[in-house]
Image 1 (tube, rainbow, N blue to C red):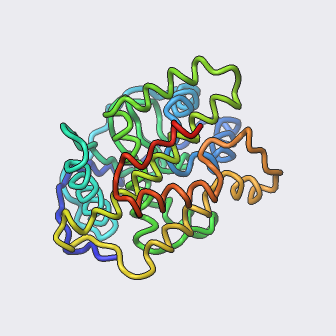
Image 2 (cartoon, one colour):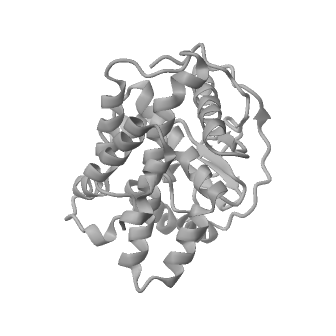
Length: 282
């Protein structure tokens, strides 16, 4: 994937090296670690708030360094995030970019205390994307995802997809529907629809990345396949099997491997957010 010549917007707050606070209490720590398979891409805001309230953290008082990071890993996040913003500015009138927070281990957020064990997540309360970059290694070594740049960019673009859903009111719509749901299984179906739409939005970004950057940020041969491989690796059914359990579709919160592959591909092939209406196929 080409990216090093891409524009850097500098909409990054770098909290790395600030000494993230570890989880207190083995029980909560075990809870979060056990949940990683379900939170790796786009943690449900309701779940975030439920877990972080138990951890006792609220608000977002930490302040890191603002601007474009000098290291390659940070620069990658900046270039990809800026390109995702540039794509969405062409697709959504009035689009306002989120801030990306880079952190290590743990950090305060508008949704409570964030832990790296949760994986990348978006907080709708402060409209920020939170990334602990050690997740890349975990994603590749423990979850069987691709190590390709586009696979990592897919993670970032998915989180931006949740920001788009917040701007459009889709997340709020889903939350209201979940509150009216007859049970957890029905509520989970809405969560799956939201996550698959974020996958589709990531595909929309990938299709339009080159056009908005004059080719500076662009997929190359084999990149889409690596992204699809990653989408497959983090499907709920695959993660349930990896954890040694049986597959329980009623417990899906992000979608099966086949569904995640389908919607990422659908977004890429169409390049159109209108093709990402996952709620209508519930």
